[in-house]
Length: 255
Image 1 (tube, rainbow, N blue to C red):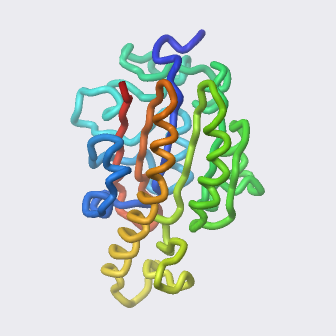
Image 2 (image 1 turned 60 degrees about the horizontal axis):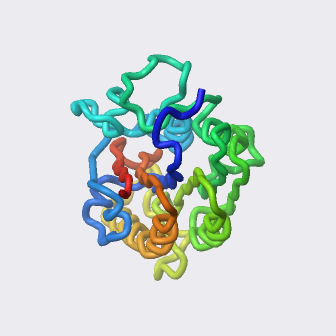
C-alpha cells in the first residue's frame, strides 16, 4: 500500500529535548515560533526514550479535548502506521507501512537520516540501536551541547534532491542546560534531583537561554528546508525526566 496522500512532501521532525512549555512560551524564539501555533500538549511519555519510541510509531503529543487531526492524534495522526491498532478515520497526514515511521518513509522512497544528542540515541547501546537503526544514516555526537556539529552533519544531506525524512533531537534544552559559548560552567547542573538547594530560577533561566541559542542556530536550517519544492515541518518539545510532563507541539504545511 502506498501513502494515500501528501506523498510528495519532505518532512523535518525536530524534538527539543525536555523543553518546558512555559520556557518555550516566554522565550525569544522567532524561528521556532514561526513554524506554527504553540500548543500545550500532553507528551506520550515522561522521559526521552519513551516519548521518542512512541512518536516513531505515530503517537505524537496531543490535546485530548480537541477534535482536530494532528493536534489530537486520537482524532487523526500526523503519522499513521497502517495495520496497527485502529484503522484510522481518514484524517491522517501520512499513512505508512513498516515497524515504525522511519521504515515507512523509506519504503515510500524517502531518504531517511537523523541525529540525536541525548544518551538514549547512543547506537552503542541496545536502546539506542532500537531508535536509530531504522534510519539510512544517523549521527550521535556523544553529548547534549553539539547542535552546531549536528547541523553541519545534516546540511549536505539536505542538499540532495528528492523527498527526505529528516529527524533532529536537540540536547541543549536538556540538563545540564548548556550551549556553546554559555557564560556558566558546563559542569554545574542546576537541576540535580533531590538536592537541598532551590535552584528553580537557575533552571528556568538557563533552559530559556539554551532555547534562544537553539532558535538562532536553527533559523538557517528552516530556510534551507523550506526552499524544497514542498515540505512539512513539525517541532515538539518533549517532556524529560526532570521537567513537567507537558509538551509543546506545532506543525505546519507550507503552501
